[in-house]
Length: 210
Length: 210
Image 1 (tube, rainbow over the protein chains, first blue to last red):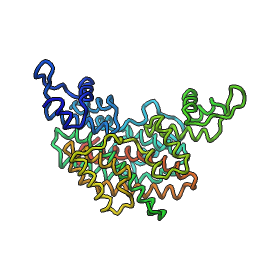
Image 2: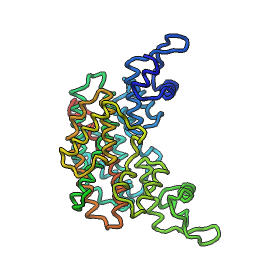
Image 3: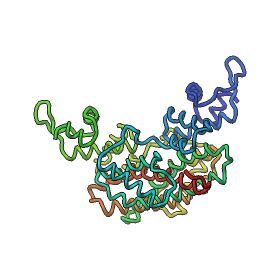
Image 4: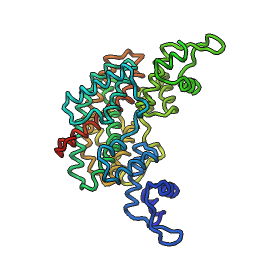
């Protein structure tokens, strides 16, 4: 198909498609004449993926490029792709050494061993979790740590469902892409549901109508 | 305290503090001489809040300014503040009218009524949820919708725990700020836990050590 049809099918404007090609996010079309290229289903699908990561995941072009590179590199272990797909949180520069950070790191190590999670404390998600807990403690909400197991129960349920979905629905060559989609879009799904459930929980607790 | 001490206590560099004051995120200190200002505990706490929203929540300065304005405006209803605190997802310009969007919107309306959630389909979180589901459907993952109730169960548990925390630990005048902190930082906490639980679920399902 021509670029105009590709644009119509995906809802991505032609100049944006050209920009993605220039930035290496999308392979060029096959040249059919000096100034016309032809695009196929692989382009359409790739554009849908870029659009999902940008619109729903709120990712920047450079971040999307990194995730796509990871998806295409079979050498790259899955959890590194997952790391790229996760929203960028506290960078390595925000490593803290105050009392709150130390206490939060200890709480996370303790949580992982208490729940018997087969994951290492060196997982970047563990550092992100420590940083979030430390930020809460600095704001006087250290007691929030009491909710950790409730959150962990919920996270386990969701993660188990995610993995079963990947296992049941995806061929091996689709798994990496599926994990990226699930990580970014699944996070958006959960975040929206949590906000909806907040309104409901608030209405039930305080008895107010919406 | 002087600005240098404020910087040391919060880990925020002096030029950044001055930038926040210029941008209206932080009130000016009290002038003690022609070129010296004094800062108090309110400044320290506000800086911790800004830092948490920026570092952990990944929010931009303009977004933080909006959330802080909402926190300070008692006229503004809680769910609008929540809307500001939630990570910006698909903007109003990405409203879609394709078949996937229509189906996703219907699925969300159905979910809300099936679960008896006291919330309206006009809640912005419902639109965000529809967009995430539609993006999945466009990528061939319409079957992900089968996981919605598992996700919703988990979201309910977390939301109930959040609200009980706010109810138990926060005075009425702290509630709005508490909700902002809980929305942004709580989301980071859940997201990290989900990534940790993924590694564990994957190890259990595929039997591989990490």
